[in-house]
Image (cartoon, rainbow, N blue to C red; front, side, top):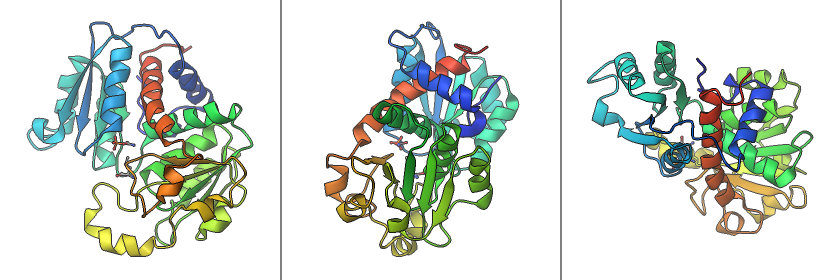
Length: 298
Ligand code: CP
Ligand code: NVA
């Protein structure tokens, strides 16, 4: 039984295999007549639609459930909810406030668990993002991605995912908002260069892609004023983009706030790959489901 709670739950070769499965033109209908449960404790546009349509693409039936509807950990324990869903579904996926919730689901070990975003990680996003970069660049190793902004769930999964495919990462985060040293060291241990600085200009100099995300993630609404203050000067605008390599790609997991973490000219401009990223969430989810269900596993 394999689970996908963070990008590096897959080995480098497994991660690349999933990317290959994501691009299968005629995927086997391994979910014909079968179900996948998707639990959402937080709002979603891309993740819900992309994952539901990935299930449909494999012949299956997705059932999306709001957290409060099943009372995850309130009406029933997380473990009991998981054991019951495992009797109906081939995979259980969940978007949760606390990463410990998906860990508790995985410990039940009766059905593969997929993390659809937690406070700590967003590995399905990272799969789609690396797929997007591979479509743009062909070979991935030797390229550099610059992250500008919050060292959040998306930054963490992206950094780990890049380390699995040989892509260097340069993060620019305000003091107190960076990734933990353990994550940086874990990525470096796979042989890629990973640096974390405070200055966005330093991080993006000559980079092949610039990625940013919201300054206030879901669940952090109470810190909005403080965060907006801390992230002043971290907007990805045309001046910052101009410091990157010629032809550099702009990435954002979305939802985006034009005029805050990114200027309208950048996200709506020629460098932006954000709509391909959004589409690739679906292809990546289909590849991941195929792999979790045993396709292409030795
Ligand atoms: N990028 C992403 O996960 O979007 P949603 O929150 O809309 O699912
Ligand atoms: N960091 C954001 C990503 C949303 C897809 C959040 O957690 O809200």
